[in-house]
Image (cartoon, rainbow, N blue to C red; front, side, top):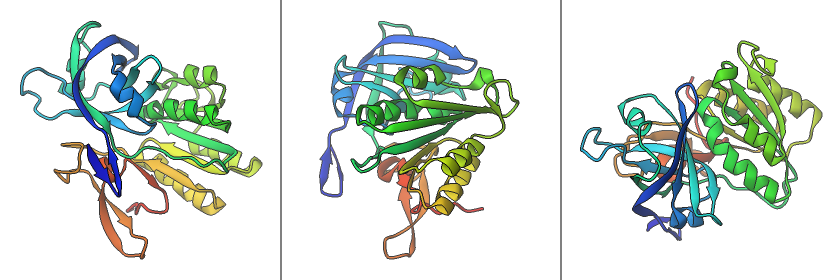
Length: 273
């Protein structure tokens, strides 16, 4: 267990069985794990630290966000991008084999019963954790705008899931190969100008996140951001993922993305130019 404030949170370190592991886009894979204990505890926005090799190389586990959480079936889905040796090793793991994970870790997204209309804004690999969030928001009766961005059609993640779930999906690609040509932040600006949003949730590249924070601040819409940072331990011990924040008293300080986040309120985080 780990302590956050007055709460004791259950965290598991265990071997899970791989049910599926398939390529879904160039450089992107989807892995489904049988992990009933983790699925019962997890919330959208949390992540696992995944051991990608039975040997000590690579030594560090990889942080992978939870893309889908199915507590009834006891499964969790990870969507990962191949960016190095660890994630490359994951691509050859076969269904039926086991993989060691620690989790669920971190602080996830939150929502209020007062919120009626919300928007999620995702870009690149940051779209993955927003699938689980959208599923929970829709279950809670929210009207959800899913604004998704990618460089091109062949790099756009999970749009079919958002459509199947029943979100109002809007898509932008940098090259115009699918959806609107341009940036996903242009879609957000359009929605803000035509719809009264109660909350915005964001996960993706830093320039996109900073633009979303600026837009929501100007429009006085509350916003939660999930930060993408390199992590060493995932539990707040190595201090490898600190970010600058503003305390409730107004002073500047630092928090650990793995332990205190990865989800923060946008007004809390200091984004240096």
